[in-house]
Image (tube, rainbow, N blue to C red; front, top):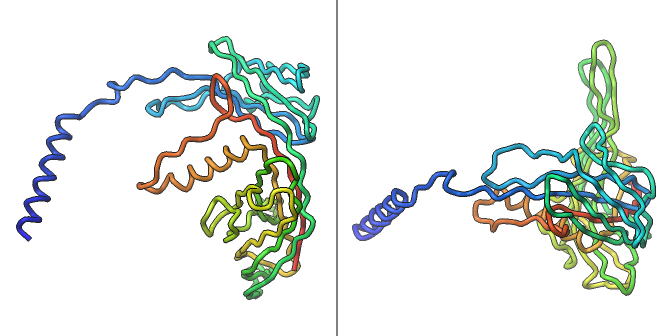
Length: 310
């Protein structure tokens, strides 16, 4: 026991000595120069939206600043189809012209007079993968009703079960997916003498032990997977869920997103970042980037939906 105390005291002394000898100020570390950043995620038929900003050093406490003098050149194949140089009031660059088309390749050149380099990137809009069938199996449920102090009756409950989802993977190419389940909910709020409401999209927490799933855990709002085990084939994915705000005849929407590889790697790195941020033992996570000469993401996706109720 005495030996253990000596070792602990010795270690503390060494660490204290090192701490005294190696103390440095933030000013001793030079800030890395900012680089141009562009972010754009697009899909077939949706308007083009670009956010242009500049990178900050991890030691820089300044707020992210949007760039208001950028020029964005948008190409379809080798043809220049749009040049954007004016921001909307929220700081985004947008256009409703030449909307994205499935299977087409798009590329960008982004520049600013405040930065030396021109950013480059290109992507192809992936094909939509349809859900052919989705069904639900309820394992456990409980429902009840109550009324509030004004006599309004509410009805709800808890449901646990699984969704069985079928789709056919596109052959001859690598396919990358995200799957989520959500429902629409009415939100009420009292304002002055009136009761107003609006509709919000609510995610359902899901999980799966399918070997294709690449983000683990039991509390996901989406699952990430690719077609390593079922390339070019029909596939059924079983997804467990729990809904603590259930109602009878409630409609759930299964959303299957098809990514290109860059979009998938970006989404996966975001997922890993948020899971590591509160873990002191986790390795640092670098957010995926597919922008040449700078930072950010330029990626395409397509969506398919299937509604199911019980």
